[in-house]
Image (tube, rainbow, N blue to C red; front, side, top):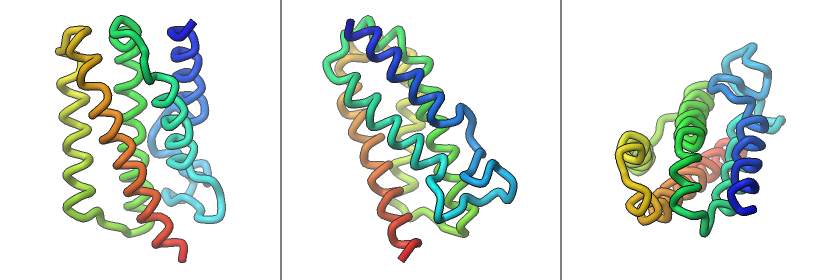
Length: 145
């Protein structure tokens, strides 16, 4: 049951996120998201939050099975965050760059791991995703003031 809930959550995340990076809240027309609308990044982060909560306690077999979709969702989230920031003429600081680099390293390393190792590294991986989303939310709050 937990496995099917995680798959459903992952599919919901992909659908909520619009599947592809570069789709701002304005449908990609201007290249920059509209501040007054819910952006693609906000939708993707909400879906990622839900998926990560549902993945808590998932078996190593379930994590391994769902890894390709998870990797794509994280890569899309990073790409969309970067697109949104460029559209707002924002630059990430050293902490932002380090967080992105750590997650990219995760995305490369995760498929090479065995099931047990994957289960062991997912909690810190989740923490890195959560930290990146918190940083992004903080930067966006600063821009909207």
